[in-house]
Image (tube, rainbow, N blue to C red):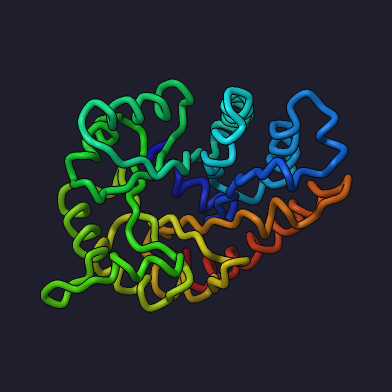
Length: 271
């Protein structure tokens, strides 16, 4: 999915919602665990309930690889089930050099056919090259994250510029906004504004709204650009909105409410 197609979906659905499929086997409703593939069945019902409200799905790879080969099988079935007009993001945060990075890129872009993958740039900009080389795929670079430990390294300053700001500005100068995005956490509104200055034309994938305390209005205030430029992720707040046999209905309602808020903010910005 290219940028114009993504923006088209945002306009069509009046939504920039990304649903995080962080499917924890221990949190799946008990009745699903009797089935052959509980993880896929859970994801399938979440997708059916939320697909009209979101423009992206983001499986967190850790929740699948912990289950071994069965988890990878569930992941493949999930990706194949997602409609083609919805962006698929592998939240893998891979970061390595040379041939290793090349193998990671092939895993997620060829074998599993994701549209995008999150990567860590902290071994250097050359580690991004194998991912960037794939046409019509997105490389989503870690910029500033929402966890408390982000202060340990990302905010170290050199000549008035934080490490994460250098990462973002250098990456943005080297790679265009047609196939790269940045992860920018939502729990610090002022940092979204600083991040936007580093990458004025790139899309941001924004985690941290909802359960982690991020505010949607603040994200839009500081991060919105002419073609939106935002994918705001919600995981637990949607997929675990319910835990009984009607869990999917409750997930759909949670996604609809967030989409409705997004639609109002888009209209406020004449989008």
